Image 1 (tube, rainbow, N blue to C red):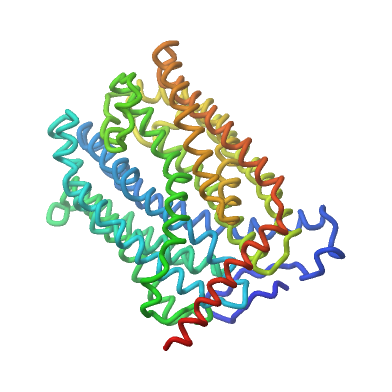
Image 2: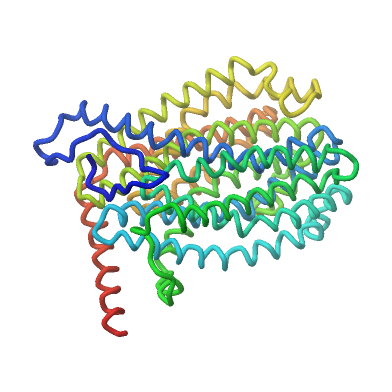
Length: 509
């Protein structure tokens, strides 16, 4: 069995049927591959359910009012996309710093560092949401300055103000989820969100479509989402206090507010790695709808989100974005599981198995992507009906889905290679790949194909697919050529440095 602390709790850790053998005299590579394949699947399944259901909390608000009216759909889409671009993706990117730090700390001789780094990340995200809330509360004015339809801008602004009630909880959930997962407690966030998701569905229906005394229409959707995020936070705190052993916990102290530099550096690079991809999708939507050809005018993230307006194109792009985000949850879950697994192995000084795990994850990503591609192609003629009944939208979505099916492979392998880079603390490299891939290759080519070659929305998706090919190829190359012995030394040096710092602080008391 693994030599990480395995505690008997109501939420037991996922056990691994492998022997902790000498790195040199252990199983051959094929045996390691099969063992790691089983472990990654075990890790990934609860993570996939967690992220899928969490994303459903956001999407449910759009779907629940998607058939109210065209204006309501446009405003909900606009508000949801603005929230993702200016808030959710930034918090996710910052929190990705924990993918590097927590798993290795848990497997080391200093598991309490898991709690300390988690506390520090709460501080970092708490400061970050202040400017985000300022944007959300002034969204209507910003959208009007960008010459959006006044009614849509007003409703989108209302949507964001109400959604802000759940933003602090969303940030806390990103941290608490990694706190549990780094210890192998993958089922804890899954069980929490499994309990909250039905509540979210009922709230969305009752508040948007329910009986007259309760129904509040459009504003009910963001309120339901905010309530659900807060319920997840409350449940996570309860489980952390009453049901989980405190091996990874660090008492809250002044240390929780100090030495935030490493988290900020890794987190900002994580924003560049994770958020840049999402921003690019909003950017091309902006370009297509408004037919902007000056790239400098497309650099404003808010302009990107605000410009996702237009009749059939808006609806089709919304369906494609939501669909690709749904399918992305599987490789992203695999990426999270891979980060945790590799981080644990590096903390245990098991370099060879860490390398095999990285290669195994890439193979699994391809398998998952082929499955999604098959599903999308099988139902491409009717896929759009899930979101919209307009025949023009259905036809447009069906014509683009083959492209979406193709890029699933590269989207999946790019996600997993990004997770491997985060486990190694290479967020800056990942950010460079994402920024250069999307903003140097994907967007310029996509705009050229869309407008100069008259390919329309399909041209934009071709451009972004090429960006994924570039990012995926380089990411995989960096993963399979990594020096894993060096990565072990890097982790040990980092932990040793923080251990010495803790000892100095203890002596100073």
